[in-house]
Length: 393
Image (tube, rainbow, N blue to C red):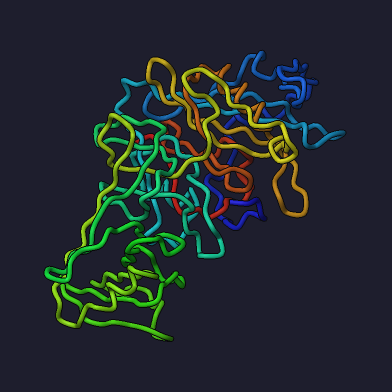
């Protein structure tokens, strides 16, 4: 989501572990080497020896940190990477709030996931609708948000494989002799061209609606709503069908008591069977080829970034790059798009994609003792509430 002042207020541990504290004290200047004439040069921070912190589950965090840079606060940079071997029993997971329009801080998600060792924030979202994810979401085998258009996600299989891919929805609403129509949206932020379905997973925030709402309970129509009665959120047990144009005409032909069957399923371009999915941004790396953006004004901003990478061997990389600068409550410092692609390639990623950044960027981890630490920033920093997170374990 666009950067804005952090909203979460919960700290995740009472003190900074010594290895992390030491990393914050390095103040030597960092040499740079430009890799694209039109982009900001990429700092050579990764050429230094990192600080290493042991984590639970046999994992470790490597941290490169410039320390404070008082003369240029936005130059302060902290790179953190946690590598999860392909052989690890710590499978990637997507965790989400109880409803699509709700959010929690990453520390709250981690508290509810005792088996997770490392966790980062999830995809971009719309704070004007509570915290509605911009892109599809699927948790525990249940798709809760998607549309018929292919959208970018990180897909996870039940066995723990993960991959950046595209996800889309297929489905139908069938009413016997009255025919059927294609379901083209599930809990989407706008009414789609076919039947758009809303379920209780939407939550309590106001939702989009078409010319007519058809309320289905237990496989039968219980109400048709037009005019000012449209737009109510689904109550427990309700599924609401809505649409415009020809779809609305068909929905309007239904009558209370008519049997209606609604079905839908998520599909991906990946070879794995999708079990969970979280929305992602563009790829920083695709089969080893860097995508460094356009080096235009937006891409060249030094902002906190969250990324997930995959090595050729199948290891999973959790990566954050952040700084210490705050301007009018907004976090600055970190990396440009081009720099992030450079960093990920140097860290060994073969494929890599971004998640939400800015004030959302957060990486939490568990030490072998069970203590929870924050790796991307100091422990006194506020956390933004987000609709979903991505974790190992």
